[in-house]
Length: 267
Image (cartoon, rainbow, N blue to C red; front, top):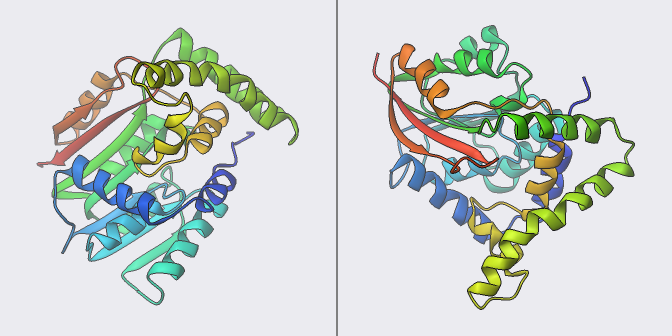
């Protein structure tokens, strides 16, 4: 399978990381989990990517942070952040792991907060991964997920585009991304002009979305493969059957973005 080089994209993203992005990431964790801090809480970051949200959890006081990713270069990104901000702290562990490996997940144990933003739909077997990670949540613990919305025909079209991206030689991949940038920018430019802003203002303001980077998110969207999607009700049904209750649901309004879920394990 031709997988997208998620870790390579995250490694490039880390070059843009600054205190403002880190603070926004912390705020996004507080907001989505509806907490002021994570003191005394254990935190599992499934598909840690750049390591930014593991870092945010640790800065918010998490007593133990476990970060893992399938992509070795992504694992290295998290190790770099740990070394830079929390060197020698044994309460933050970073390693390579696979959400499809149930034995690996069982060895990790259970956590107060299990966090996985935009990851499990890239495993190659999303529904198995969604089932697997449910066991890592303590009774009374929180599970946060962000999963791509199912747009039916449009989602199938994007699947073909993503496959094409990952079959292209290195020089062809940025060209394919460049083809889609104008279309992606139009709604933002129109909104900026209506609000009296510069047409490209969203590029400098984009970090306010979880501390992310516009170009890296576009690259991830065009190339991110494997790729699966789900309707919100299907996610809800799965976790209700697993003994979870839904605390929060933030949809993308039927678009191609992530739907976000916060569940509490009650049994």
